[in-house]
Length: 66
Image (cartoon, rainbow, N blue to C red; front, side, top):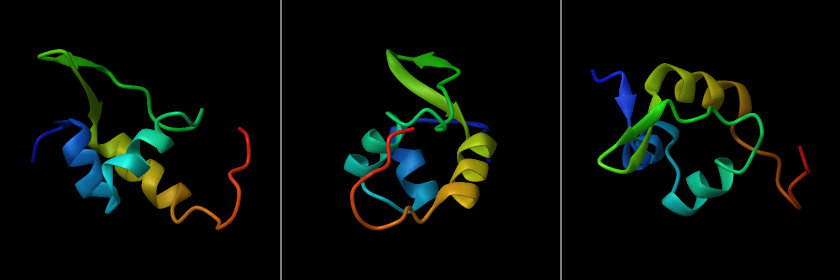
């Protein structure tokens, strides 16, 4: 299993759409990318998995500002 994942794999790990991932990336508590590969951001799979287990599903309704 690859340790570094891109946006597509983040979607798969979290079971959400790209649109949702881009919204999550704006949150302060979402893992920061560890770098770029071919100009695209990459994250550590384990950090994204931990974030998803700790945070998802998000409460329904208007988002709360972090």
